[in-house]
Length: 215
Ligand code: ADP
Ligand code: ZN
Image 1 (tube, rainbow, N blue to C red):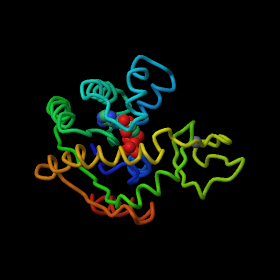
Image 2 (image 1 turned 30 degrees about the vertical axis):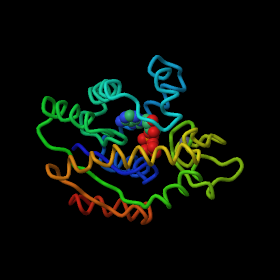
Image 3 (image 1 turned 45 degrees about the vertical axis):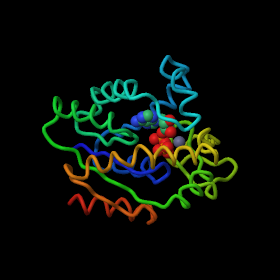
């Protein structure tokens, strides 16, 4: 099974992608996580991507195409995957079309989450991320000596560098100017599932699964 989760930054893609991947037994491929890991390790990719990601701009399509091909060839993707953060441009969607034409027989499902920008800004400025496993929590859930309920590490929560108000506004602008068009590119040719992302995490997940006829 191949899924693409789509929507603006902070819409809940990462949260839902993790839940869906574990429920469906498929791999979660987050290009944002791959880039942040590369930046942390200071790899060649990380050095190229750091300034771009921290400004809220898009990493060039040829680099992203290479990353996604490499990720999809991994063993963990053999039962399927959910793409989170890719494709973000029409050029990336075309790269993905080529990959699908050679590797898979079915079209992917597209899940689109909708949340207004005003709510997004509030969510992103207030969220924290586990440094060890990427689990996301709202700031009001954070306490001192907080133990990550996913990976059990202590005090591992941090604020992403790009979750700064100016950078968030830039990311939203890039989303509306460039990435939003990718949805139109898919909507005439794929199985599209649109869900209101302001509902509770559990309700969003069950809405997605019932619309896909899975339960
Ligand atoms: P969000 O969706 O919350 O903005 P992500 O973790 O998906 O965050 O991505 C963080 C940043 O990584 C993006 O703002 C961008 O700089 C870079 N990035 C991630 N995926 C892509 C992509 N497919 N193409 C270009 N840049 C990307
Ligand atoms: Zn964790």
